[in-house]
Amino acid sequence: MSDKGVFLYDDVLGKVLPKEEVMALRAHRRPVRNVQSTVHDDRPVERGRWVWDRKTQRMMSADEYYGARSSSGITIMKDIEAYQAVTGRVVDGKIKRDVIGGRKQHRDHLRAIGAIEIGNEKVTPPPRDRTTDDHAQDIARAMQETGYWKP
Image (cartoon, rainbow, N blue to C red; front, side):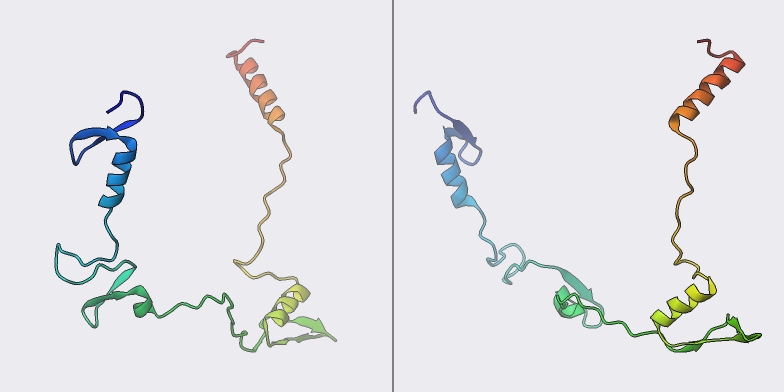
């Protein structure tokens, strides 16, 4: 063995060996995936996501349990059922209550009467009328007035 080079300790053999030899030995020692398990029984080791099915009292793959998921990404939603609006607008001195037949008509009706749905409104933060410099000046003034700080 030469004195120059990179050497590693092989914990299986308990020796210091050149790096190339240790790496070659480690490559041969890596476990092979999907081989039969010798620890518990003779079934092959399977990877994946599993779910306990209470009806059949067995483990089954998540795809089998939940069904295969589609990867199209398209979602089709049913439109809302037609309804008569509770609020209305005044037409010729009478209150006219519209019949709403879809989402677009619902939005248009709300816009026409100036209403919003609770929970769907867009909340905008109040405008900031003061800057950080104003706060710093107020704190300095208050400290001067109380005697905690003298400039």
